[in-house]
Amino acid sequence: MTSEGRPARPRRKAIPATCALHRGPIGFANLMVSKSDGTVVFDPHVTGSCLITLDEAGASVLRDTLTEWLG
Image (cartoon, one colour):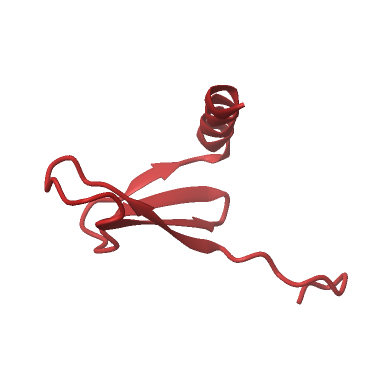
């Protein structure tokens, strides 16, 4: 719960994805997305071996782009 009495929003989310390199079926790979201290982290395969990080400005650009593409 937040100090305002609302449930806290999760800071991690696993998203079913497909890995083109490993050519698994749709949903074969998991993409873990998390947020910490203003940084958004993408962790393909949930292994921690290759992390893609975005600061808040970069994450905002990604959000706007996905909103434009997806409507």
